[in-house]
Image 1 (cartoon, rainbow, N blue to C red):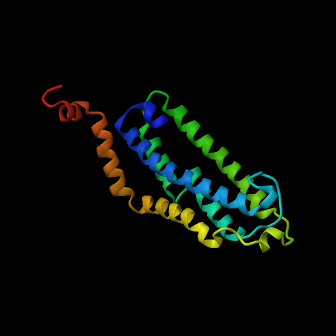
Image 2: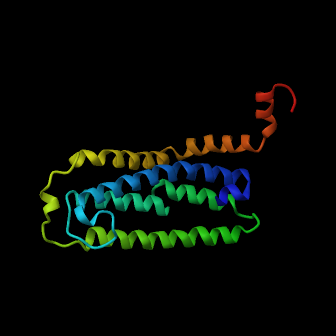
Image 3: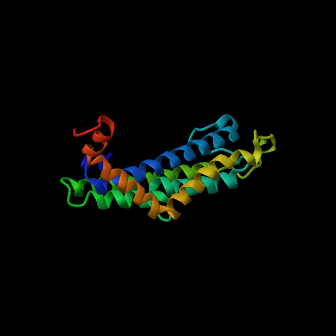
Length: 189
C-alpha cells in the first residue's frame, strides 16, 4: 500500500513486484497451515504446543523458508520487493515514516513467525503421537503445491531483472494515461 500511496513510478514498480511476491507467499503459507492443521489432529491450527506429527520435519523446513519470504529476508523475493518499495519512497513526503513502518512490521513479523514455528515444531512433545501412525491424506505428495509455490518465489529472485524491467514498463504506462486512452478511445484523448 505504501508503494501505491506514494504514486511514483519507482514505488509503483516495487508495489507490483511485491504484489506478485505476496500472492505466492501468502498462498504457500495458507497451504502449509492447512497441512499442519490436518496433521495435528485435535490441536488443529491452534498455536499451542502439542505432540509431534507426521511430516513435521519437512513441514518445519517449508514453514521456515516461507516465513523468510513473507518477512522479506534475503535471499527470497520478499527482500527484493521490500527493497524496491523502500528505494521508491525515498524522497517522498513521509518516506522516513514508510521506512520505519516497513522495517518495524518486518521485525514484528519475524518475531511472530519465530514464536509460531518454535511452538509448533520445536517445542512439540517428543513422544510419538497417534497422528504419526495415521495415514495422512496425500502423504508427502500433499507438500508438492507448497514446494511449487516456494519454487516460484525462488524463480522470482532468479528472474528479478527481467521481471523488474517488465513491471517498470507497466508502471511507466500507468503514469502515461494518454497512451492507453488513445488505444481504447481511438484518436486524441
